[in-house]
Image (cartoon, rainbow, N blue to C red; front, side, top):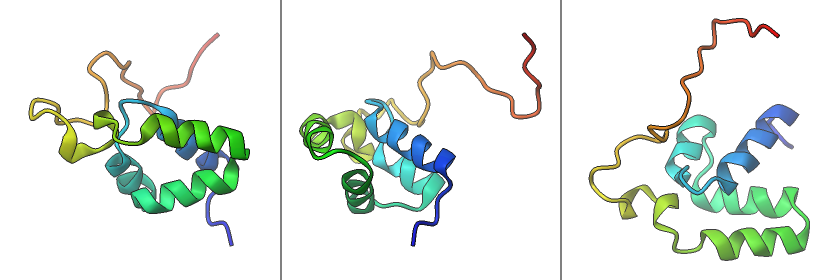
Length: 91
């Protein structure tokens, strides 16, 4: 049984595709280990898209916290815009 909302599923997939988001960040936010993310992606993607994703992330230093340089200590890029959850966007 799937325990994630559609919005959470979309966010997990988005985080898994992002180069700078380590698997540890996904585990921290959603409780999915790297193996769980792999199974999750296989379940929610077309086979060809899954193969492309696996090829892309295998061995990628930015996807594994322990392979990152010591000076990278955050999940978020320093260039990423700060998002306040208490504000209302205006058009």
